[in-house]
Image 1: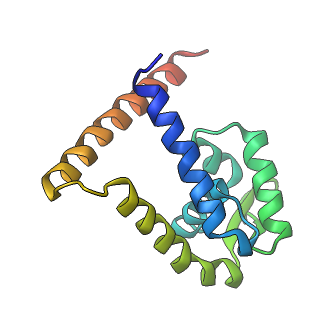
Image 2: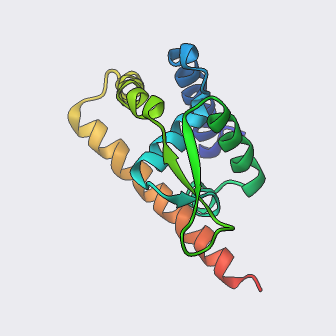
Length: 147
C-alpha cells in the first residue's frame, strides 16, 4: 500500500537512522535525541508525563531513560511533594550536546526540503502540522472515552 502512512513511517525511520549516525560518538540513538530535547525543554518532567507527551508506552520510555541515565545524560530526583515520582533533568553532559542535536535536526530538515521553494516548505509544514493536529485530537478523544 502506497498511502500516506507508508511515507510518514519510512521518513521517521530514516530520521532516526540519520540522527543516530550523526551522533554515533555520543552513544545516544536517534530516538533518544527527542527525549533529551523534551527533558531540556521541560526540566523536572516526570517519566509518566514524558511518556504522555511522546505518545510512547511507559515501559519503552523507562528503558530509554535508564540508558540515558547510565550514559550520564539525565538525572532523576524525587519530586518534593511526592517522593514516588522521579523528576527528570539534563546533566551538564547533555546540555553540552544539545547544540549538536539542534544542528543535526536542522541539517536533516534541509535535506528533507532540498529543492523546495520557500512556499513549498511553508506548505509542507502547514500540511504536516494539520496531519499532526488531527492525529493528536483523535488520540486525545480516544483516551478520554476509555473508562
